Image 1: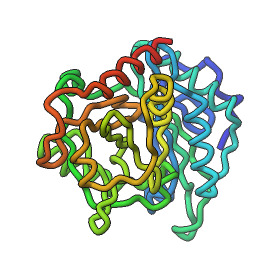
Image 2: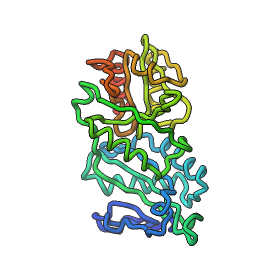
Image 3: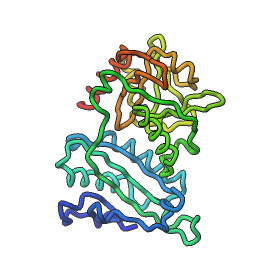
Image 4: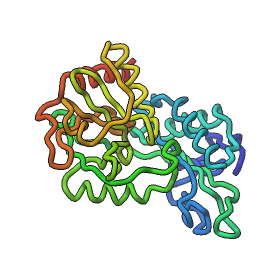
Length: 288
């Protein structure tokens, strides 16, 4: 993997992505089929957004990305500062898009024996944001449950096969997300790319085990504290969730997305008061 000192601004404006020390076009974002990312789905990533040139909680995402790499035994040759500089330059190179999705990828590298990690490929991808339709924030979204619990849930691994299948099933019935649950214990974990919150009697409840600790999740918990909203972080059962007064999911993409329906269980026909307060507070936080 090349040193970040090679990421100067001499590249053509069409070179919007970063790969192994150089700015490249989308056609040049290629890796070997012998890379463990292809052979085994082995590698890590992180995902963040930038709106009007402002990167949302960059340092929080970089810390999580570095923690994922360490957990998988993948070596990062770039410091947090160098990573930040690459991302900032990428935002500038893609300034014709006001709302950006940014994906950091570190692969397992080419493997001689098809199992042992090699030299990683490092990439940063920049694409126009695709967010949920505005009416979902007014009406609430439908979600489905899906029997699954991610292994190494604290790691943002490239192995997302189950998420692809779960979302395919969700979209087939007009749902915006699939929430992982344990079919035996009925414990609720997280969405394919989101965290889950319930509200009962004005108190916010969110799972704490077997989940990825999302950056937006942490922000919502902080906002709730500032607003004086009670918070309980503990396991949640499926029956408790579908009986909640309000439910919403959070992520960098969805931000705070109210949930109208889980499977065939209607939660609420309107955005609940606690969810609405948090959504309003988040808007202020985003423009702070």
